[in-house]
Length: 307
Image (cartoon, rainbow, N blue to C red; front, side, top):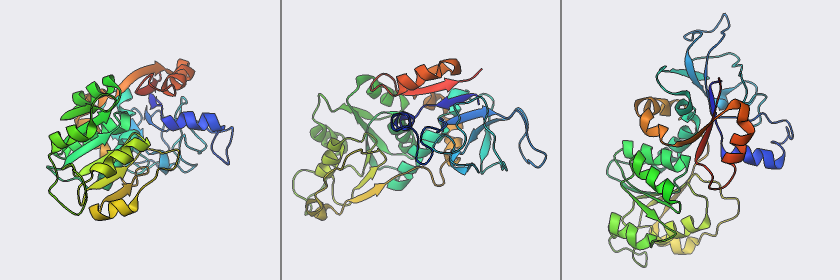
C-alpha cells in the first residue's frame, strides 16, 4: 500500500466494535492505492512496479476493509487470483498516490450521479460538500450540467467552487429556496402547489432531514431526487404531497460498475480531484488520521500515506 483514504464508515466500524460477524476483528481501510511488489506466475497484464488502484469488493476473502480478512490500512494487501480490470487497474506513475486513493469514494459518487441519469444542460443541486458531494459535483460538471452546491461550512463551499461548481449557497445564512429559484429559474405552473425551482436533479450527499424537506418542497414536476448520504434516523416523506410532482426518488449504494469507470476521469482531471484531499498523514500516525477524520468538522478527506 502507498495510500489509503479514511472513510466515515471506518469510524462507525470502530464505534460498534467491528462488522458482525467479525466484531472486534475488522481490518480497516477500503480506499486503497498501491504499488505491485510481487506477482504470481499465473498473473497476466500486470508487473512489479505498476501503480494500481484496487476494487475492494472484488477480493476473494471478503470486502477489503469492510468485513473482509484484509484492510488497506496495512503495509501489504494480497490480491488472490488477480485479474487486471477486475481486481485492480494500473494508473500512470505521475498520479500522486493520495489522489489515486480517491478512486473508491469517487466511484461511490459516480454511481450516485449515474443513478440520477443527468443530461448535458441539466440543472443540478448537490447538498453536502464533503468528499462524495465534491466528487459528484465534478462528475456532473464533466457531463455538462449546471451545478449549485449547498453546505453550511464556508471552507467547503470555497472548495466546491474550486472544483468547478457554478454557484454555492450557505444554507446557514442564506434562503436556499429563493436563491435556487434565482439560479435555476422558476418551474412552469403544474399541479404542484407553491413556487418550484427549475432544478432537474437534487442530490443528497449530506444526510440531514432538512435536505429531503427542501428538495421535496422545491421539486418541480418530473424532477429527480438522489440519495447517496446515509441517514441514521428515519426521515418523513409526505407521499400525498409529492403525488402531483411525480418526483423520481433514487437511492445509491456502492459502485456496481463504476469502480474503474471513474479511474479514467480521475487520471484526466487529477489536479481537480486533488483539491478534495484536505490532509495527508503518515502511516506511523494512523490513529491520529482516524481521530481527525472522525471528528466532525475537523477535516474533509484524510488520506494515510505509506513510506
